[in-house]
Length: 134
Image (cartoon, rainbow, N blue to C red; front, side, top):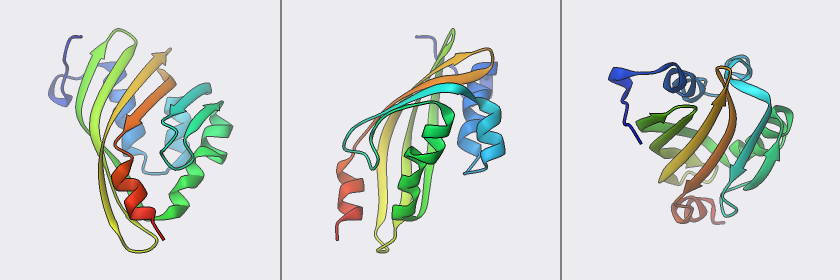
């Protein structure tokens, strides 16, 4: 897969970077994610599962944020091949109990007509589970 970094960006990579930069701003999220998008999130992640449609992604999946005082997805490396963008990065945050967390992830995006239509996510769920232990 041809590598592209933020220094040599494509329209697809810029769309994904706008998604990461939204930081919960639903107007930005709605501008870059298609209404019929699908999120496929590893099962051991909080609220993991498959979500069909932007309303389900926002209303059902994004509810996992309530487990954290703060939570961020930071893309470190971006790779583009046609309508697909792969991002290697890390989650950082602090649980409601005050436990810090850092976890590596890989996000596999598919784009259509300038919008994200699919995200397949995988990550190291162990640090997240430890941060959420009661």
